[in-house]
Image (tube, rainbow, N blue to C red; front, side, top):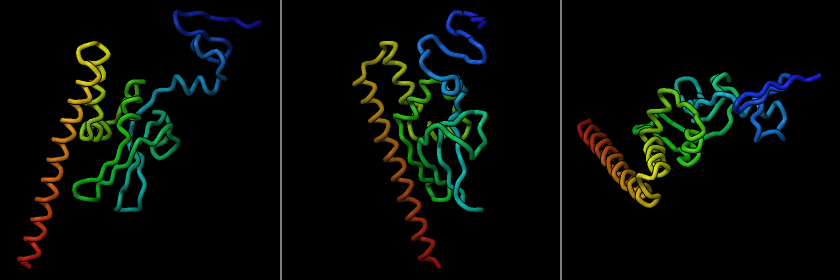
Length: 166
């Protein structure tokens, strides 16, 4: 005899939790569906030379353990730091409720992921059209690219000046 407890959106049957629209999934995959997800950094590289992967992972997993999806990379050793990230995948995880860690939030903000997520929220509410949101995001990306290139030029000039003095 199996007791079924019915709530507004979740059914509990034995030790298996599932939403009504996911009845065909097994218990193991259903638990993965409901787990809390964090966007965080996973350390790689050798001692003294850190290199990070930006990943979406179960919040209960180890820092360098299993992850659900690799979203990008972060190399803090170079100046300016090199960051590669899949913006669309990161926005998808944010829409699904993933919570970024503090450092990951700063990286996502720096690369414009949080801005795109915010603009898509405006599109969903009807405040913006998809084209307007995309135009704002492209304008922001161009402005950011100009700032980064000016910093790289400034660093190169300082390096050349220091070499000339020596």
